[in-house]
Image (tube, one colour):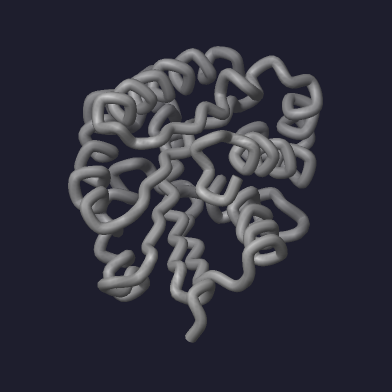
Length: 198
């Protein structure tokens, strides 16, 4: 196996990682890997995104990384989740901000010694009221990553006033984008200075 194929990249998260709503069935993570493959050669890529999972659900799946992250290999992990936590039931988020932050902190503690780690923050949704919750949690995640010296890519502030992204959200479930939106997320991540292959 040559050097390039010894790079293992896992994307662990929710429906945005999976690419819900994307006609190409790639999402932004699939677009990233296609770009990496074209520019740098083959990598081992594992999409571990599950729709409708909260941060608590994602944190419970950390052991899924073990067989995919071989000891001695160049192991890299993309984390991205949190929007599902802001779903309101009886005027309360289904996961408290503190529990959400604790879940991310657990994942960072469990993985940072073994992998190169990037956290991709929460994208905005269509509902302005829910976006207040999304913005708050995104900020808490950003602060935690900064405290732990983990790269954080902020999607929320880059997309919240983007007309094309909003229009893309409006044509679907108003949470996940379609092709245009995933293209924009891909552009933001791939052009961020913390992206490994930039």
